[in-house]
Image 1 (cartoon, protein in one colour):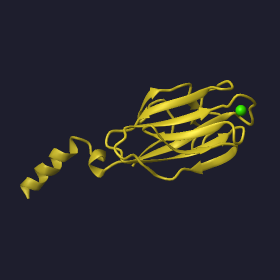
Image 2 (cartoon, protein in one colour; image 1 turned 135 degrees about the vertical axis):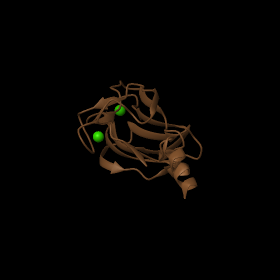
Image 3 (cartoon, helix red, strand yellow; image 1 turned 90 degrees about the horizontal axis):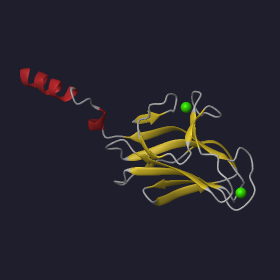
Image 4 (cartoon, helix red, strand yellow; image 1 turned 90 degrees about the vertical axis):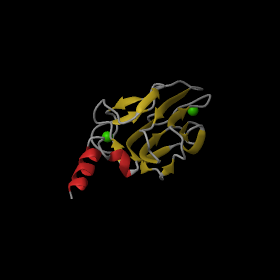
Length: 153
Ligand SMILES: [Ca+2]
Ligand SMILES: [Ca+2]
């Protein structure tokens, strides 16, 4: 497992396209920072495209939504496939665990319809946890050491 908590500016994944999303201290599930959708106008979409850590097989995250219910939506994608959407006032909620199925990119998106805004007019993401096979958690240098020890026995 590897978790990004947004508490510093070094992330465990690569942001391919931030689309206005940025680290923010306005809300947090844990610590003092989260990842917030961009400030957009009616009819616009703010999408962050993220390349997941190498070898990650699943992802789970916390999200908070404050938007115009049924009109301005948070959407989550694995690859190009939408996994779920939410709107209105949603307090910090943990997503289900999504299998990546070989996809290397995920996207967080906030889209506004043609008119009106409610609440903070934003989506917040925090504590993004990736499930990694054990082999990917080992430091490359730790394997030769273990092999070396085994050969002495
Ligand atoms: Ca945080
Ligand atoms: Ca709207």
